[in-house]
Image 1: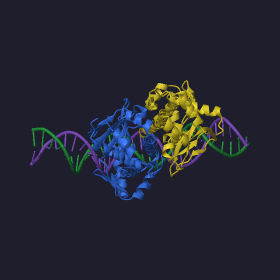
Image 2: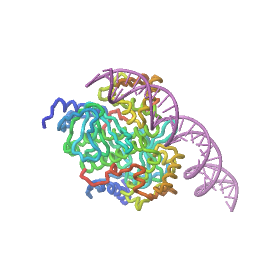
Image 3: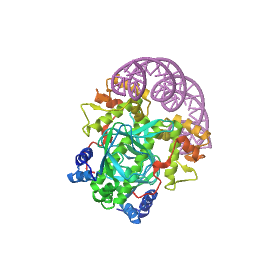
Length: 249
Length: 249
DNA sequence: CGCCGGTTTGACGCTCTTCAACGGTTGTGG
DNA sequence: CCACAACCGTTGAAGAGCGTCAAACCGGCG
């Protein structure tokens, strides 16, 4: 296939970067991942990448842009289940599930590396350790889902937003997109509302509250954390569910 | 190891029963699963089976009783992320994650088949298709998590409870524990509240509402669905996220 | 300049929570 | 065999948190 080798490497490297925080990845395994990429695909902002219910034969590895999983309710309300950043294999689980039951959409312009399921199948057959790392990647999403259940089930409005800012800071840090307690986050307050199970009006008020409390500011697509300890406390945030530690897997 | 072969078979059969709804499982693969069981373990009600943060070297396959994943907040509130029924491999993901970031507790007396991670590792190395089925099993939990995010994020109180009743009916049906629109569910209203992100007082009121609407009754640990279509509509429930279809995986 | 998407603010209302009391059932010990 | 505690379910009244509706504001861009 005619894939730009530079781009394929860049995409694979991001995933490997994310995985190497959690376990060793040999250069050979990294090469297998890179060689599994069949195509690079670009999308504009606000596009639907994967549609609910459709049978899939390839998976999308995000390597630039901001993407989300979401579902729309009958009354028009939207719930974003998870935000995805560079290095996330956004629909890897479709390899085993064959279809996904929600939509995946771009919030900004986004670029993906495409990995055919056939290539993933070969990994499960010849590269058991690499296969376990891919499994890990889907289970990390699962752990993030569980934390989101806690968030929408039991956290207050301000804590929901604070929690999201904490989580994204660490996740962006692992792929080199956040540092010094600040990062770029091109979301509207309506997007934040969809991601936290609130309304945009209430998100606006809570952002003011967090700002006035000297914890964090979110303005012009820029998150600046002023009090990391305080923000984590306000969110009842603990990073353990992100599994930021190296172990044999 | 001295495992009662009858019990080991019964436990493995339940998991295989659940998997065979989604894909073919050869008798050989079923035997591999059965032989992976090293022990049978019993717990009384209200016991903690797996504690948050502890490194694990084996996983628990539930084959009798009702179990849940939960986390307690600082103010004492509890959120149940998922209820587990017979045939569920409740902490299979710890095989790859090495520890889990929430607790697993028994709601009733419960019986587990223990599978050492070492045996699971051998499956990933020698039985790729079976490994993918185990992967599937963890991703099914993940899909159930996503639906729970929708539930607590965007559904009304009565819809949350209605949704739980719908989901459990189908999940119990797949392992032969529900039929004719009724099933046994030994939960208190406080448990239901923890599972739906509400208070027990409000759960009580919503149960009355669902009962008065002629949709479902829950009394004496017994769920009786009077209007399956109506209940699904009230819950905005669609079974697609349970992947109740056979495909090559 | 005037539109347009996003943000901000106020007034009001509804859903769910909180607090509290009461009733039914089960189990236990005197 | 009854008294009593413990637990669960039920109901009422009051209140908080977040949603709804609506208007104004702001900056960017055609």
